[in-house]
Each structure stands twice: as structure tokens, then as C-alpha cells.
Length: 118
Image (cartoon, rainbow, N blue to C red; front, side, top):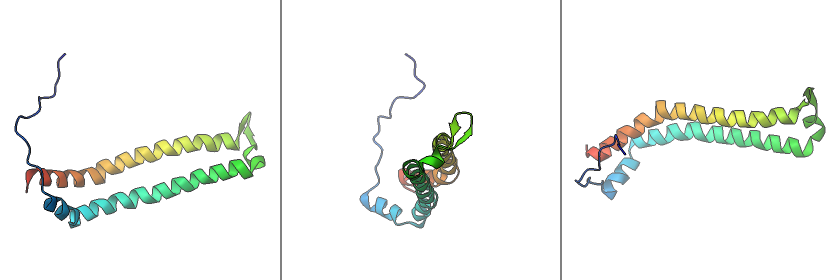
């Protein structure tokens, strides 16, 4: 069985000290990374939970509305249920793009500085 990954290095990597971790955690660069993550993830999480709860509440208390046929045997409940899946995948896709563009470069810079001791 061939592998493309090199074997692990025999030299042990120097791990950052507790003080170095605390210094990075208190840095403006890390605060910006955290702010960038939170400003994206928290509002989307709240919006999706509200959207989900709206669907659940409509399903429980607005049966006539949810049972309204739109075309053929497709009703409002079915369309909104499928929309739940669609929005889940759209949010995951959007987050992966956001992370690749905004979060990963900042995190990689912090990581390389920590590993390099710079």
C-alpha cells in the first residue's frame, strides 16, 4: 500500500508555552478572528433557529394554512419542509466560503506564528 504522505518527523516540535497561548488569545489579531467568526455565525444561527421554530409553530398551530395545496399534491408544509433542507445546505456552503476567505487566513497566520515562534 503506497502513501503520499511523508512519515512523521523524528524531531519533537516545540510546543508554545501557556504564556504564549495567553498572549495570542489577548492579541488584537485573535480578537479580530473571533469577531469575524461571531459576526457571521451568531446572526445566522439565530435566524435559522427562528426560521425552524416558525416552521414548527406553523405545523402545530396553523394546520389549515400548512395544508393549503399549491399545485397537485404539493402543499405549503411540504414546500417549507424542503426549504428547511435547502437553507441548511446553503448556510453550510456560505459558511465554508466565509471561513475559507476570512477565517482560515487569519487562523493560519496565528498558527504559523505560534509554531514558528515568531
